[in-house]
Image (cartoon, rainbow, N blue to C red; front, side, top):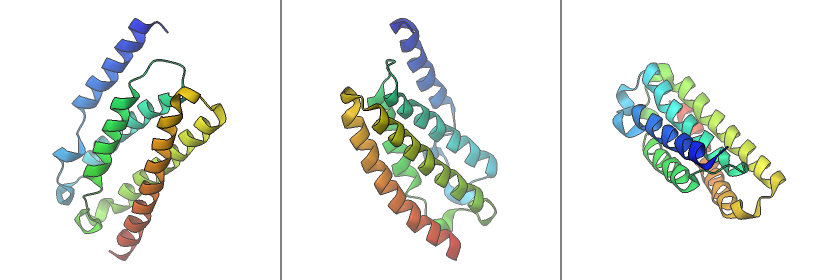
Length: 145
């Protein structure tokens, strides 16, 4: 992949992300299934960009990690009680799927051992540990609601 085409791919991914429904645009109490899908499409795109840490291709990992942090901060402000009852199962499903995808990215990074990406791996491991802890709490809260 040439650097011109990889730069274009980065720009395309970022502009596509801007067109999606961002979590900060949604009131959790009014969340619909369609909005939930759109919000988690954003997370999926961010996660796809994070996974490029396991690739030799040029990528803007700083921006991807910043986007992941911002997404996570916003969604973590939503309490279990705010999520409408009819979509809680789907919400939890998306959250647990994200946990597994991040674990897969970490496992692949550890097997590749790309020295120049080691700091990104450490950042992702810390994120995953913190995310799993938060998700355990959210799962318990959602099961009680």
